[in-house]
Length: 174
Image (cartoon, rainbow, N blue to C red; front, side):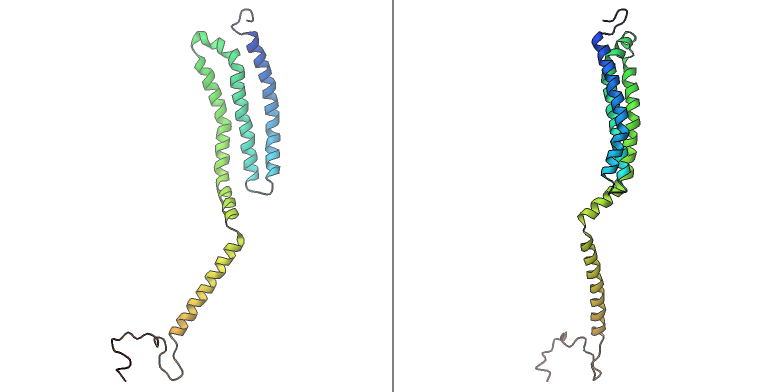
């Protein structure tokens, strides 16, 4: 123990190592964002959002490392007054900031991601084929309607020549 304090030398060493790790994480966060954005540059609407999410995840990890690394130094001072819960609340509030940024970025990326996913499952050829099929079906419907309303050269209606809806036998009516 360090004289006149409830802190152990081990807890102090862990806190100093934690400071070094936190410095590396804070330095790396913007670089992680850049790397993710560049890696997804082909996907324009999602790339910046994915970079923001990656950077915020690094910040959440930073808060978690700080929480565990500084506990041995801070908690011994809070124990005599029964306010250890304040340490937990402070880091919870600190972690909410990058978590909220992640949630907002995920919400904003939802529509472009769904569109990208839909496009990956529905090839463009299939969409064009279905449009051509729909167009040809419409023209077939028009042709059938025109032929049903047609009249032969002698002036008799030819729309229902093949269908005979009467109960009479055609051979007996002759």
